[in-house]
Amino acid sequence: MASASENIQPTRGELLKLKRRIDLAKRGHELLREKRDALVTEFFDNLDMLRGKREDVEEKLDRAYEALIDAKVSDGSSELEKSALASSGDIEIDVDSRNIMGVRVPIVEAGEGVERNVTERGYSLQETSSNIDVAAEKFEEALKDVLELAEAEEIVRRLAREIEKTKRRVNSLEYVLIPRLENNKEYIEMRLEEQEREDKFRMKRVKQKMEREEAEA
Image (cartoon, rainbow, N blue to C red; front, side):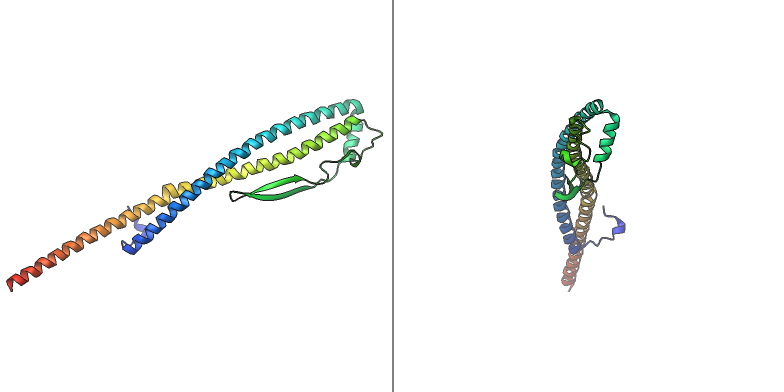
């Protein structure tokens, strides 16, 4: 029943406190279960989106590398490397956050420098073919999708962590705290019943004694 270390006082006041704690724990357990179920739904919805984004990224990278091979064939490795160096530079990535069921998840958006027009890339348009333009454009499109993929992966990762944490809290309430409180409640109820029987027995003995004394008098 009750753990001796808890030093539970078998009183009606303690019983009322335990009942309130049990009600509170059960309400918390129900809310956490609802949260867990909602998180699982969000997780699988985002997992489906993640799979779709991965497929999109793979397709766009395949097309980008095909365009790169075409540019290498038409312009040569040396001109391709020179154009790549000329077009290199900093890019901006905007990172914000939003809330999903109490979980802060990132919003990642491509900023300036991710997608550029042909005159902003820095290499000579007179010395290069349009194949380099096509390759650059396709890699920039792929990079934008890679950023969206990174966002989706982090969302799924954070939701998975929150689901695991919520599951542990649900299990702790369901299998540890609530059973312990219920056992403590049963222990107090048992002791109170014992005390009530003992009190009744004592009252009966007292009554019998008083009746004998009256009879003798």
